[in-house]
Length: 104
Image 1 (spheres, one colour):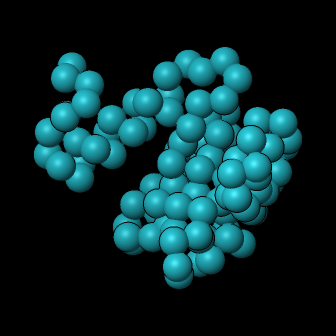
Image 2: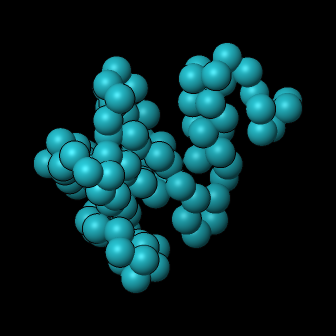
Image 3: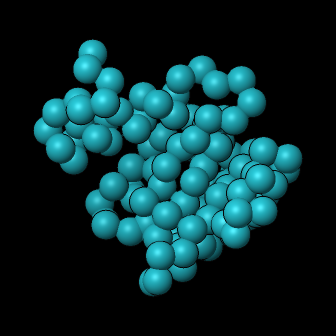
């Protein structure tokens, strides 16, 4: 792997990433997102996953915590409910042992 990045999400929300050179993989629902993640996990080091697809895949995504790569990052899209930030906060606490950004 050479630091390749990808994003999995619904149509329009991922197009801005394509303009930035990130590989885009559309997924209209969590079942499709799971299939895509299985296919691309060995090729990409960082995979962004839109929040609305990440939430129903919480248990499935735990398998990625066991290896250094890929890092799967949930990102807000559309109307965010804070799920992506909560996942990021928990990952930072697990990795560092403290909450350095949110202080709550």
